[in-house]
Every structure is written in structure tokens, then in C-alpha cells.
Image (cartoon, rainbow, N blue to C red; front, side, top):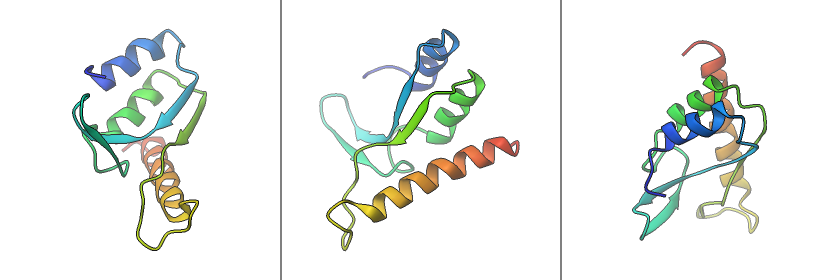
Length: 98
């Protein structure tokens, strides 16, 4: 989007205007990007999760857009397991003061 993601989360989050988060990361530019694993893109996803926590986000957060893994099922079960576990790990780290 060409914006500072963390500052944008804080801006709208403080106003309680974030209701549903599609938790994903991308690599590249606005004009040419590729979806990545949550820990492999342009954005520090730990910092995004921290920003959501700091503004008191209490809406729905879901992993978004499966990245293909060789040998995965047609539905991307391995990717979804990875993405959801990654999100939960970030949340648990923040809940424990990391």
C-alpha cells in the first residue's frame, strides 16, 4: 500500500476502526509483490502483532492466502498449520512480555 504498516495499524486501531485482520506478509513493491510466509516478507510481523495488542484490537484475525508448499494438500493444510501456529506463537510471546 505504500504506507508504514505499523503506524497505520496504530492510527486506525486507536480509533477502533480495525475489525478483521487478514494476517499475511508480502515481498516486493506495491506494483510487483509476492505473498510469502508470515515471517519472510517486507513487514516485521512481530511488530504488527505488538501494534494490534497495544491498541487493544479485539476483532477477528485470520491467516490469509496460502503459500504453496511442495507436498501439501490441495487445501494447503501444511501452510495453514504453519501460519496459524506462527500467529499463536507471536501472541503468546507478547502475552508473556517478550
